[in-house]
Length: 152
Image (cartoon, rainbow, N blue to C red; front, side, top):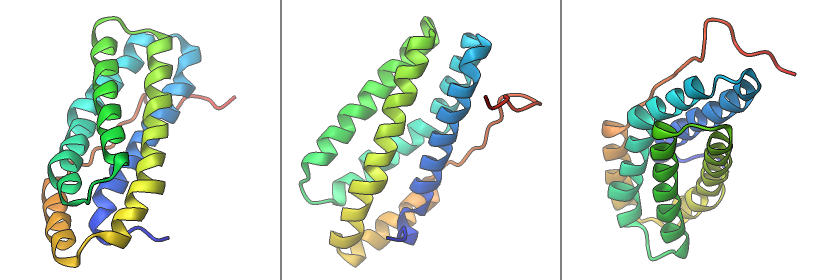
């Protein structure tokens, strides 16, 4: 199903999150753990924290009770904890755990939550939420270096 225009800013943030994970995983063999962790922390502070806030303050409150929402909020807290760990003690294991959870989380939101939301939300509430999401969404694009990591 095509993504509803009211969810597009969140879907764009999802695309950026997936790209962050791909670039991080490609960079792991370089051994630049601190640099990769720094990019995740930076992206979290600029875009992902905004994303979680938009979902928790704007989108989730207008949704009917869905068990999936509680699960997604728990994953937000887990991702925040992983970022805290990457700030203080970055490791390849933490980077991989963060990327695995974020990738699964994004797919769950896109494939499950957003599909349900598009079909069940009342138009008026969805329109107001979409306007608020559009107004508040932060979109950022980061590169890892002047030269992209090689694909092996």
